[in-house]
Length: 82
Image (cartoon, rainbow, N blue to C red; front, side, top):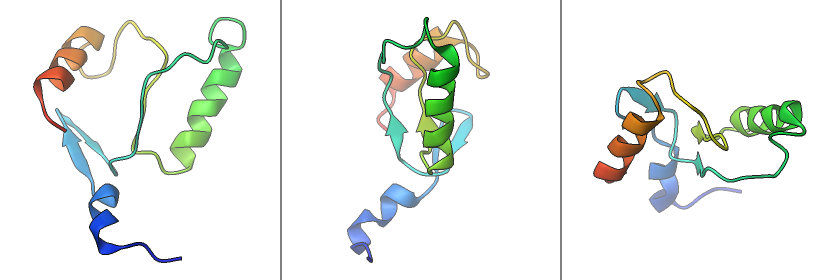
């Protein structure tokens, strides 16, 4: 099945601060309820999404990130139109 040309932008890389996402598919942060009891299951779910082609896979909650910490990244996202 082919896609309409107006969807092509979804498959283009996009810069989010110093990080380049390979496309514009973004899994929003959400709570599955498995994080505390089944951390390996949550990690496997994120891995499957990343392998499936998602550009950004957000975790349930984290205390920091590779680009300067959660607070700084959140402020950047809130101040930018993506």
